[in-house]
Each structure stands twice: as structure tokens, then as C-alpha cells.
Image (cartoon, rainbow, N blue to C red):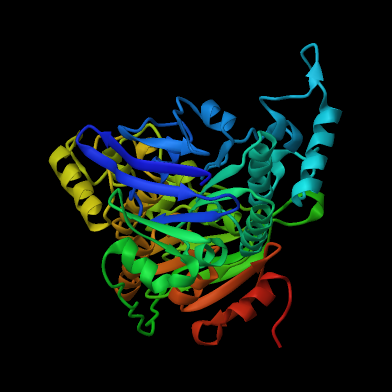
Length: 498
């Protein structure tokens, strides 16, 4: 056995994050760990990588008991970790990011040419293509993912931990990553894969271990299980079928007319975008990341000003207004990046929940402390947000739990119009069920929703109409009943439907 974790327990005060967990890994194996947000997956891997110390239990590598006081200790034992949020320097080149910490050169001088040659050699050896001279900051998420993997391979990793590796990748990038994992495992590398996406797990994993509430509920070989059984093991109950009735659209709550944003080299970022969303409907936007979806949402929410065109909300021209003014006109916004747009890492759970609600939660200049605590506590219970207390800093929440808090906060704004951008990114299957149900509930109550998601299955499941964006334009529109993944994929690639 290459790696064994035996009877691992991790306590935070009276809270048990991991309870007597046994886990093992064989050479060349892909072993997936699945479970709900807060089930203890990342904590277990942080212990293995030396970022946390177990309260009790032992770790063995090649049969030898080891102690990891820091990630450097884990790296020395051939264990590398690619975190959910990339640990890269955007201003550095790809080669610089890969060799950092063990830079080639003499007399304190960094040899960039040799670094580039090292990266080229890694690419040839492991079949992963990157441009050593390219800037990481200008590289697509899929490229950054490969950079992270090449970095741990350069460090000599035989065991690679991947924490939610496909959360920010396009479908094509996901396929490339899964192919790379399979290829590297055939070369003898071993992988521990933390993921919520059961279809990806079933595609690439040899074994699957399920955690719930900090304990193992089962460990099975891929051929002995399916997504239905895994989901039951994760949430401990039957998942409900989504009850989606036909939409009854009302008045327009959002209208865009001729929106344009100039880009570099005479290519527009947004090119004459016109669309509308009515009350009581969900309009989905599909498209490969980087085709203007992010800029479109920023224009609607006031984070970016268009070079041309008009944004109307509830029949009122809001073009050029501030984000606060636009929100006051009736917009709520689940942002596509929870850390950049949705929360302050230093803020508490209570403060993060209050954001956007602060004006109505005060009286005569004083905040309604009891009402605020009751409001956020209700969301924590309803969405099963795992947190030590409302005073916990959001930086200590798992990504999925922070996502659920932001979704609850924005859904409770009660506005006529809602932007839902990647609403279930990083959440588990049970939370996804809850969020989908809440979005449909708001739609049935008359809210107009603009849904942007990189998950085609999510767009197809929830949308009444689907728009496809390609190179800053609306490439096509399909009604829900005529849309398929094949048709959407064709439009997303720049093709046309006859």
C-alpha cells in the first residue's frame, strides 16, 4: 500500500471535523472522496498535506509512519496538492510558477532559459501542453490547472491531491483534465480526487470513499456503484425529483438594447447584445467561458459601463447608474466568483449575510442586532450551512458553504429580478437540489431570473428559454422543449442549427 491514513480524528474545540477515518491509496490508483459541503473532505486532505495536524491517528507512506508538520514535509514524502483556488502568481510566467522554490541558476541568478527547458521537458514527459513563456494571469483556467499539476510533478510528487479541480473549468477543459489524470495514473502516479461531480468521479476513479458528517459512510469500487447510490450515501436520504411546471411570463423586468463594449484589436467584447427577461421565467445563458458572459453580467449590475446601448430594469433606464442604485431598482445578484464579488474573507458569517440587507435592517441609525442574527440563523439552518458560529470568519468556511450563504442572502432580497451566475458552483448534490428548488420557487412567485452556468445540465434543467453566447454575440436562442446538449454545444462552438 502506498499510503494509509488510520483512525484520523480532527477536533476544533467541541466540533469533530473528522471522526476515526481510515483511508488508503495504491500506486497508480485514482481514489475519489465525495460528500456534502462540510463533510470533512478538505480537512482530511489538509491533514495529509501537513496544513493541519490530526487530533489523533497515524499516517503511513510505504508502510512507514510519518508526521507532517508542514506542506514541505509532505512534499518531501512525494505528496503534492492542487488546491481548489489556484496558488499561482498571476504576474509570473508559467515557467516561473512551476519552478518556484527550486529555481535553476547559479550565484543567486535565475536562469529563465533553463526554466523554460525544464517545463518543456515536463510537458513532453507527461503529455501536458503549456507555453512556458506565457503569463499565468492571461491564461485560461484549464491552463492554470495544468500549471498547478506540472508544479507538483516538478516537486517530485507521486501522490497528487486534487481539491474540486473542475469547479472553474469549461466542459472541454474538464475532458482534458480527466484524460490527463488517466494518462498520469497509467504512468504510476496516484491521485486523490475531491469532487462533488459524480459523473466525473465515476468516469475517472478506481475507488470512491463517501464522507458524511466527518465519518466514512462507505468505500466502493467504481464498478460496484452508480450516481444514485453515491448520492444516497452522501446525503443519507432519497433525492427529490425537480417539479418544474410551465412558466407563465409577465412583464419585462430586464431589457438590454444594443449593448456593446469595445475590445482590443477592433474585436468587440460585447457586440450589439439585445435580450429581455420577463417576470416568472428563467432565461439561461450558455457558452464557453470567455465569450462575454462575465462582461454582460457586469454591465447589468453596474460593475462595468457599456460603450453603447441601454440597460432597462423594471422599465427604467439604469445605464450608467452605480451598483447600489441598480440594486435599489430591484436587482439581486448571485455572483459568478464568490470570493471576488460575493464576500470579504475577513468578514464574519453574520456580516456576509447582512451585505445588501443593511438598510432595511436598521432603525434610527442603529442595526437591529437580534433581527439580523435571526435572519442569518434561519438561512444557516435552511441551507445546511456548516459553520462553528455566526461570528466565524468566512475564510474558514468551505467554498460550498460560503456559496450557500451567498445564494441565501441574494434569494432573500425579494427583488423582481435576479442574476444567478454559477449558483451551484462547488456545492454538493443535496445543496444543489435545494438551490434549484428555491430558484424555481422564486420563478413561480414572479421573479425574473437570468441564469448563467457553465453546467449545461443545469441550464437545461432550469431554463424556460436559452440564449447561447459566442464571441460576444447572441449566437442563438432555443426554447426549453427544443434544446439539447448537442444543439447548445454546436452553437457554443460557433456553428449553426438548420
